[in-house]
Length: 307
Image (cartoon, rainbow, N blue to C red):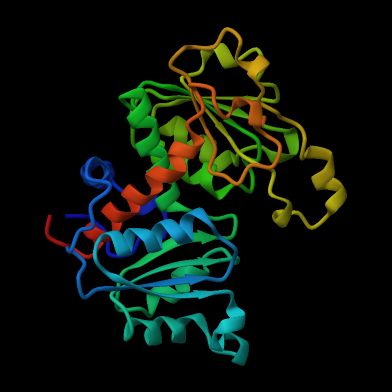
């Protein structure tokens, strides 16, 4: 049984919670072509106020794979938000129509406001630059699937470490594990927050900040690339100065470990050359696919559906 009702932040996850979810995701992965009926009669409300491909469709596909149903909304233009309805009122209303909610919103902590007044479980599917906890779970699942473990790895996080909710959520989740070396590789204006660095160090991990990844790649077990998020910049000039700072190519991987895993939460812009797509280390499309199994597990456990 999970220790939380709503999943709004990685901080609500315990190591035991992560183990339960990843174990159940493995079970769904092993039977990935089967349609279950454990969620028969249950309804997922999929509320996306920001664009999404992988998160939205994997949550909806997960509910269908579990035998449940989905009601969906994309953008506030299709809701009474346009008439002035508050998120707290929407939380109360939507609770009468469904059994669980997954929600994305541009404003940090907006989903917390919604969830405080909802009476069904709520999953944060991304609230601005703040949190994306289900992504961190599927990232952890992908790391474990290819590396056969999560503890005692050397992982490089590359790109937008300031605004990237996926990378920040994953680093917070990995703080629950042991002996990880974090290389935080970014343009000086996109560094990881000092508070997160302190959290990782206080959890017993090693954190090293750098602005160049090329000499480092042979040391890594995992490299986690991220795009520079144009939508988080107020000044386009500042975005243009940093957007092409890092690029991973086949030449970059000379001398790297044969077991290296390259991850990316997608969409990519120009951080990973398409020439790497067929490389044995390229696991970012697997990573996207694994989101289905992890979200099936998350829905199942949060609704306490029978195994």
